[in-house]
Length: 315
Image 1 (cartoon, rainbow, N blue to C red):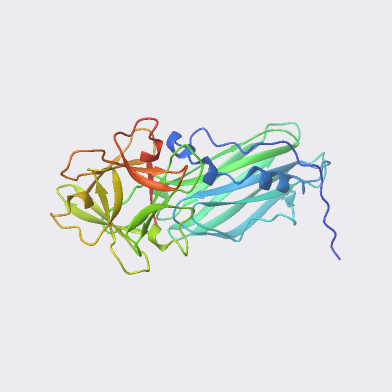
Image 2 (tube, rainbow, N blue to C red):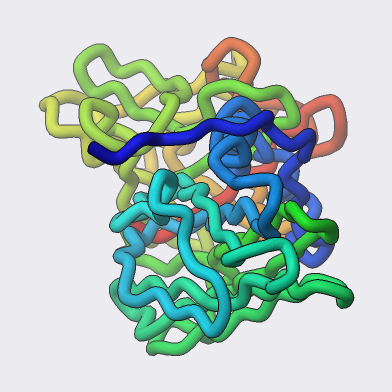
């Protein structure tokens, strides 16, 4: 019978790499695992070793599958292994350790996905020198993705690898829209075709099928967004500028001006504004209110309306 040993958790916070765009950092609650998870992982690392608590955060619409692990020194902590699959907008947290305090731990974990031949996340926590990380990203989608990493120092260190999409979207793509509001909460724009309402969902998986949207050409440089919910009902995102609300409409023709949207990449990083082109004057910017899970229209994209910054990720 294998006996599991627990040690006192190390007081450590999961850092976010400096190079990750600032607006993406607003969604730190989905980028990073909960602190109690990090503390739990650290409790498995023996204090008489050099160890690393490692997080790989997948801020894309892709599903990552574990391909290989490789070590030149030390190895995985068997009680907290890397996940075999990392779903969209989620993370895996695991531990690695040296054989003893006098030796280091050095190795890599590699994931693959559709269009990713290899996402190699390398790490090294040696005795007597600073810890380092390295990333290799290859495959047909490598040009539209980025992975940034950071690691701390000490006998027990923490490292974070953040994969995110820089390529945006195109007409015909199926996407998820994630509010990057500064308040933690539900973030996925959810078209609820059963009753025609729009709000925010906690994730983009079943039963929240309305969190997948098809982007279509709305004419004149505009776009329409059609909810792909499995339930029949109205589907087109419709901004009601007269009262600042958002619902679903049954059609997106010229008579439904609120279903046409101008989508603009913001200068602050990887996020977009989504501006309603309804003919009636009023607030226009799609606003995901993560504090209470609602959606509406705001008058601008400036603070305090941080929910008007959206990550648009291909599924």
